[in-house]
Image 1 (cartoon, rainbow, N blue to C red):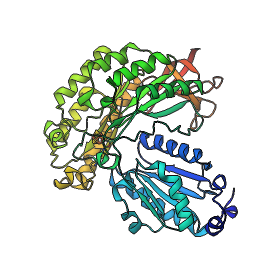
Image 2: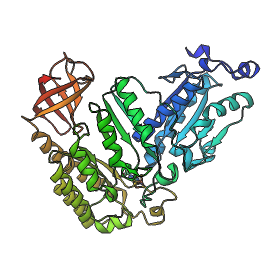
Image 3: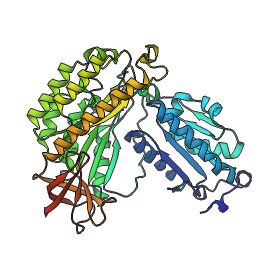
Image 4: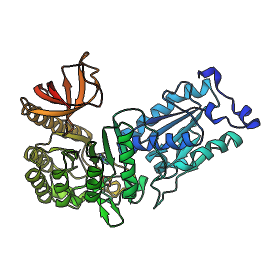
Amino acid sequence: MNSDTYIPIETITQTKLQKSEFPVYIETYGCQMNFADSELVSGIMNKNGYSNVYSPDGASVILLNTCSIRENAESKIYKRLGELRKYKKKNPSLIVGILGCMAERLKRDIFLKSDVVDLVLGPDEYRKLPSMIENLVNTGEKGVAVRLSRVETYDDITPLRKEGISAWLSIMRGCDKFCSFCVVPYTRGRERSRKLESILKEVIRLWNEGFKEVTLLGQNVNSYRSEGKDFSDLLKSCAEAVPDIRIRFTTSHPQDLSLKLIETIARYDNLCKYIHLPVQSGSDRILKLMQRNYTTEHYLKIIDNIRKAIPDASLSTDIIAGFCTETEEDHLMTLELMKQVRYDGAYMFKYSPRENTKAWKMKDDVPEEVKTKRLMEIIELQNKISEEKNREEIGKIHEILIEGPSRKSPGKLKGRTDGNKTVIVSCDSFITGQLVKVKITSSNSATLFGEPVSSK
Ligand code: 5AD
Ligand code: SF4
């Protein structure tokens, strides 16, 4: 369908909304949870007779699934809304919707910030999308739905996934941790878990559909609870039910990462030996202000337990530079902790004050240029550590899941290790989804390169 075939709103009100002729395009920003949510929304729309398209050209509905975690995440959306103005000019019937965290945070105020927006739906309101579109088409009324739920898990909705070998699967929603810097507990509401049986069924279905890897998602998967079962029980059930599917998970909070969980990961071959364990800061004083509920001592003890039980585990983390009152000494403690743990990778950010959080009331007193300098030092150190760690992989053999052709190296393939490291394989005879034993021959700070040894 091209832009000439748009159905004008007036025509639709007179006849009936031809949903299959009303293609929906979703653009996703932010964390993996949002990517999983966009697949849920596509599933809901599909079930209601709408078609999905993968480009804004020719779409009758454009939805932006948004993130509020830092100010620049929201700036990106405003910029995008500015660009969408030209689509709306070309097609005045075009419907633009804001989904996700920004919708929840700003609610009706989004209309004041952008006249392009027609619909605003928070993360627990996606079931209402089809009826809100119909209402908008029939009445011309803009719609807002931002109620947070204590029970919504979209358990009965089948996400519409793009073809591939890797699938996202959310096992819980919301967060009760209330770290003082974080807006997520306000935008995604209270923690609630999906039923174990239903997750298990979905993992089995994914395998039968040809997926080779599944990533279990939650803001804090370690607080998963369902009918007396915890996250370790869930991992164990999934690992045993589908022994050949690779299982990953994210994100873990250090407060709840139990020995039982570490032992479970160690026990099953198909549970990836990769743990993302955000530390945020290496200073106990800052951790307390962040309301993280652990000390560096406790954190390092967990790392120690992981390394003892799973010597080849890959570890990554999140770090915030320049949180309120952070001194040079606090910053040096973060660098020190990084040297001690030697993470395989890290996501590193400058502190960005978010309205309504506890930290919003503290003074954002670290000057921008100091935040930038500290962040640069953190990134530089991590790059050096990643490069050294990747060099240590040379000569080792890894089982790689082939994801497809490498875009940067034509004629070669791209895959991932159990520990989540990208490997470029010098061979194009394997197919996507195949597990291949690869000997690592060279590396840089971001990528490993290797040759196949034998395949399975
Ligand atoms: N400023 C900067 N980084 C933040 N994060 C969460 N909130 C903020 C904020 N206000 C980071 C944390 C978290 C990751 C998902 O985003 O490191 O672990
Ligand atoms: Fe935000 Fe903390 Fe919850 Fe993570 S655990 S989503 S950082 S409040």
